[in-house]
Image (cartoon, rainbow, N blue to C red; front, side, top):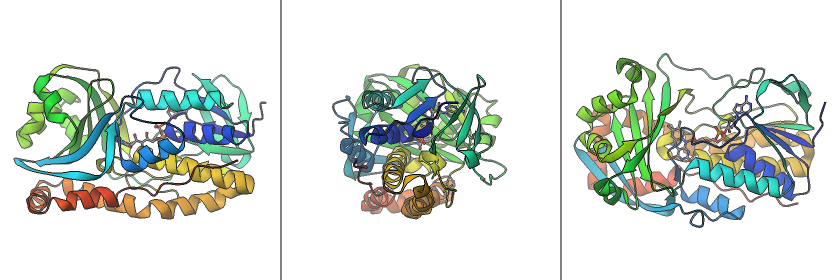
Length: 372
Ligand SMILES: Cc1cc2nc3c(=O)[nH]c(=O)nc-3n(C[C@H](O)[C@H](O)[C@H](O)COP(=O)(O)OP(=O)(O)OC[C@H]3O[C@@H](n4cnc5c(N)ncnc54)[C@H](O)[C@@H]3O)c2cc1C
């Protein structure tokens, strides 16, 4: 049985960022992830000011990675539209690019990175995981960073409603009009039981990402393109945007997204990071910022207090994320009801400064990166 200092389950932004900080502090963490190659997961690719600042603190310049600069937010509901400047410089960056960069930096700093390794089950009381190939790994601490995927033995006790949200994402090859319309902007399209985000990212593609009630995709025969056609009857501009693509990539999906989840307690040695710690409504586009803030805070508490630091870290991080998660959740619930969304858009049309204010209030406080 291998025994690294700290064992990290999952190599998304949360897992990779904690591996990087522990390795830079002279520890020898081991990170395992089931993906061999980084692929774009279901994510809107929107990096807010807090995510950009956290990445800068780790030595990552998103503009240097070619991210598309974003300064404005535009929101549609039915035929109404409201637009306002963001209170920070934001960016569109593909997750394949960001995640690969973080993992490469972590490996260069001395973290062990094992790709293509699937964890079959976790044993939190023993800080041990069993791998699909039959091997076991144990650390002095276990950092759970498997995102929205539950690990057997350590699943989050989330109560889901009977029509949970699912996430869908594809890459659009933008035609000229789409390219022009999206330059410098993140668009949000609100519709019945869901919403879509659309932006340009560093690879020249437009990232189209939807959060939608499972029942709507089912009613569209499970076909995302048909779902878009149906949504276009409610929100015509989204249909125009979709038609403005010269090609549409494959769709990826994730089921049962537990918006609003926060882990409030844990046991010594078990640190939940990223989506395992808190899931913010995607409308706010702050999931990566939460992943990075959780990694910084967990690394700091682990380096300061050892594995026992988990029991101060977890409730502290739950408190830190309470305001943005609760506010984003109430905005999500409003935006998904056409009557309320219409009234909201009428208000935002009169007072677009409220968009700027909401964008500021749904950010997560940045954590100082852990120092050795
Ligand atoms: C519709 C939608 C849109 C979103 N848009 C945005 C946005 O625009 N901006 C933003 O900041 N956030 C957005 N988010 C949220 C963001 O995607 C997540 O918050 C973020 O990915 C969380 O990072 P993480 O590191 O916790 O998990 P993940 O990025 O999910 O990484 C988890 C890793 O664990 C690995 N893993 C899982 N199970 C196992 C296993 N059994 N064994 C080994 N490895 C395993 C996976 O391969 C993966 O690499 C969106 C979410 C949704 C649903």
